[in-house]
Image (cartoon, rainbow, N blue to C red; front, side, top):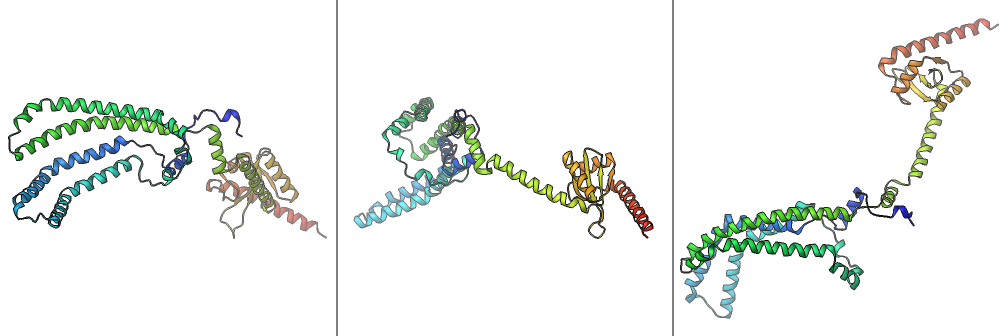
Length: 364
């Protein structure tokens, strides 16, 4: 059981993993109004650009049927052939518009959350047939908002249509006896005016609804602090275990570093806080490199190992600090420190030659 103080209100923003899980389950921020806006906008543009053409084609088709009605076989088989032929012709005329509407419907959803396919929403869940859960959904906040939104939209659309159609009533009565070919362009014109007003209104509704759906979605995927900690453990491991592993690795690196101290030519110190062990092998590298470094207790241990293995210790505070600040174990020393290190190595090698000479002179 999680601690009581960590299971309270979900106040933390969703982590990337939480968002990914919600997307896998098909839960994303989406608004039906945005999809409807895409479809109606596409339909309006199609009618505006292709409406006259489709009208002429359809009128031509029906005129041909009426003109040749006396020659058409209207038996059972002939009527079936005629209907099939007319259906094909109508689909050829209106088909591109239908395809455009389908593409617009898909684009409306892709625009909101990208391409997404999830079978999770189709899986059977017991709570869907639970009457108690069904009653909760029936009186849920979401359903109330959807109902209010539908009533609001219907009211606005009805009011807009009333005020736009009202001035057209006298015109409609006068156009009853007019030629249909004259009525159709006028109907398209007034229909486009109404469509533009409705699209503007729907745009406002779609933006507001998407903002609300986004806010509600973000609220639904929030996490408690306990859930964030649990996810962190699942994805990155227990912090205590990671700290223990890091400590073991540091200890192993320190042991390997200390094992290299006896191979150093000199240990540069400051003399109490820093210690840097250097080695120079012309065959291996063009410049001296660091085999061990440390501060505090580690520096003391490096000096102890150097003393035990007769590695010279050279006190140069500023050089020790600079080497510690600019180098890691295994690094070649920076170019701007070559001269200073070369002087140290030259001094150490001079002492070695003197010690060797003294030892040789003292030998019998």
